[in-house]
Image (cartoon, rainbow, N blue to C red; front, side):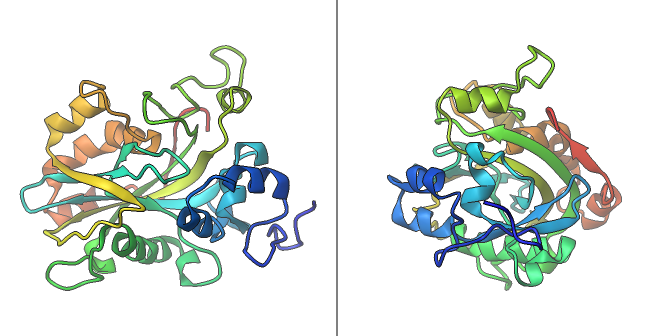
Amino acid sequence: MAASANGDDPATATGVSPASAAASAALANADAEQARLMSERVLLVDDNDAITGSASKVDAHLLSGGLPLHRAFSVFLFDADRRLCLQRRAATKLTFPGFWTNTCCSHPLAGGAEADGVEGAAAAAVRKLGHELGIAAGGDRGIAVDDLVYMTRVHYRAASGGAGGRQGVGGATKAAVGDSGVDPIAAAAAAGAVWGEHEIDYVFVATKDVDLVLEPNEVSEVAWVGPDRLRAMLNGDDGVAVTPWCRAIAERFVFEWWPKVGDRAALVADRNADTIHRFGDC
């Protein structure tokens, strides 16, 4: 079915477009709350991060729909002791269930102020920190927009798998088109994968002691880690799986930023606001 003139996919009353056969099949056995959240509409963007329309989360994340590029954010929250908060995604999640990842990662939503570049992504981050981790929106033990330091943007794509494997950007492995002549996303779909990510991700750092109340439908557990523990997790020493976007951002940036955590001016000086860093085959 053709998209509408403004780039939006036609939607049903639930917000899920009639790319319906694939969407209905994909959601048939999904957790009810996770299925509901997949009706939310995200911002479609071009390779330069200009908004081109919107799509339901279902249509933005189905491999069979081609993984249209959309806008996202990732928060890396440190406490006063410079420990990084990692979350383990709940088993109910449709993409990357059971994977460890950065503190919070989700999407600015279409149709409101969250479409407004860095400020919109920061507002979305505060909203989702509250939803997933129960972090108050401001206050002495909460996170406000002003607590978030915008650092850069990254562009990646990856197919989602179960929690048992080591995944990087570009598909089920770190392979990119050209390594074997096969698109790894297409190969993952052919192997039975249903969901994936293709995002331009706004990356934020925050440093604050916070109170957490986990939403179990989103997050199964958290860990506060130092650099050595994070390296061990990325290396697979603990037998854990890490999401591809967290892995890419951590390996490229986070260890460089870590000594500056808690020094806002130093982090701002390290900001790369205008570049979109491309990972894998993007």
